[in-house]
Amino acid sequence: MFDISELFQVSASTVVWTIFIITVFAYGIWPYTYLKRYGIPGPIPLPFIGNLPLLASMGEAQSALYLSKRFGRIAGYYFGRYPAVIVNDLDMIQKILVTDNSSFCNRYQIFPPKGVFVNSIFFAKNDHWKMMRYLLSPTFSNGQLKQVVPLIQKVIMNAKNNFGELADQEQEFDITTVVGRFTLDVISTTAFGVEIDSQKNPNCPLVKSCLKFVKFNIFSSLIPLSFICRPLWYLVDFLRFPGTLENKLDYLVSFCQDTIKFRKTDKTANRRDMMQLMLEARMNNNNTSIDEEESASLKDFVSKYQDTQSLTDKEITSNALTFLVGGYETTSSTFAFLIHSLAFNQDAQEKVYKEIMNVIGEELPNQDNVRELMYLDMCLSETLRKYPVVTRLNREADEDIKVGDWTIPSYTDVVIPVYSIHNSPEYYPDPEKFIPERFTPEAKGTRHPYTYMPFGKGPRSCLGMRLARLELKMLAASILREFKFTPCSKTEDPIQLTQLFFLRAKNGVWLNVTRRGKA
Image (tube, rainbow, N blue to C red; front, side, top):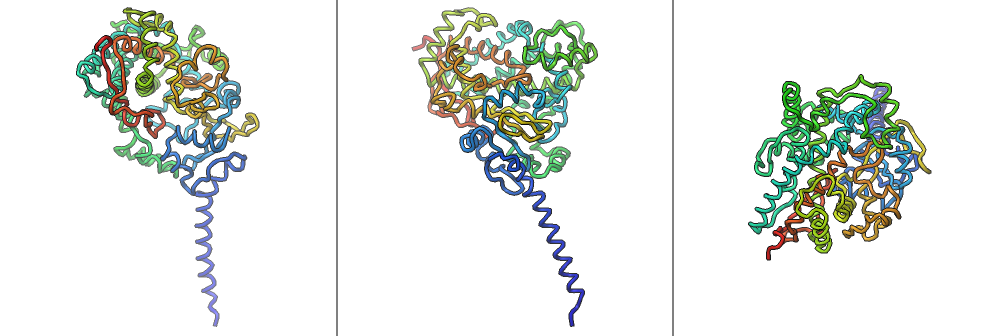
């Protein structure tokens, strides 16, 4: 006899499995049809994890280069469950960064920033970003740079002594370590008015904390799990595992906060460093450090909030930390790549040396005389072309928007692949070669201006660009007129690069150094 209860048992089981399959499809498969619906090509994503294996194995820079070669001017991929669109078309890039900047004003964020970075200009959005950009711009004006030149010169003397000891010892050395300490000394004295001499005190807590932060590997932590399931981000952050980012910042945050408290109570010292300028910053119409690309974006905003806005302690801490960590990583790696390139191109190194001696001689490098070092500037530009430390720019559209022949989806990571463009043979023949002459005025005039973006473009370009170039050229002029660099047994060519967001040498940059004139 037929038992009707069996029918209900089968049906219940079927329902459970049906719900399970639909749930798996909705969460792990359906999101990966998003870019396809916009007609954007790209590699086939895996369920639940998207293209994370590709990104983890190749790194941000190389994966963007690979996808650009394979799919052309525009390509899509998935960072876990989150869609990203790589834009390689230069005219489209110009529209995104400048022409249509009002629609792409913000940087894409997979997760909202927490902790100290909530108030960083890097992550700020809309009016909050406009306010901070306006208030922080004078911190990096030409007038302010003149005031920090003596501070940089003092740190350079310590660096010269360090290179002199290495030359006398005739030892192979990793230049990234030496220059990293120099860069940290420059930032600590120009930003905070603190002289730490990390070149002689490598165990200084500030030095050790910076190193912990910049060596943080996102793919060796628990963070990638949150790219698959957003709530896991908040769990990782709440539990503060030893490998999480917040744990690497505790000392740096305390350092910034203590400096602010001291400045507010100490009224005797007449400091004009970045920390003091941030403390004194207030909205007004007298900011002459804003360039043309920024002024159109900020003009109406300044009139609206004039004399009513200043930076809070949290905003000062957040931005001071951004300058400290960002400046440390980018400047030290760039200088190491520059010296490595000159070590393998001795003709270029000798040409730089002769230019320094003809233009500066024995004078101390400063803001005015390094401006006359045209060939050194070309070498630096070529280094930044070949090794852009910031390998990509990110933007986000607040609504679907037509750019060129493509529709860019809203709330999607719009990636400008700086490394890929800089190393494209279409714009730079033999891109793997170090050719400073690519940056003569005549050569630059033949290229699209958006083939070169080491500091970004448009209103959200790097605030610290002028300071970075100044300290790099001052250090190079001081060091290269007294020392000569050559490859050693540990020198890599080509350099093995890291698989992280910032470009740096995976195994360091090892070289030999000798004093000029020594046989």
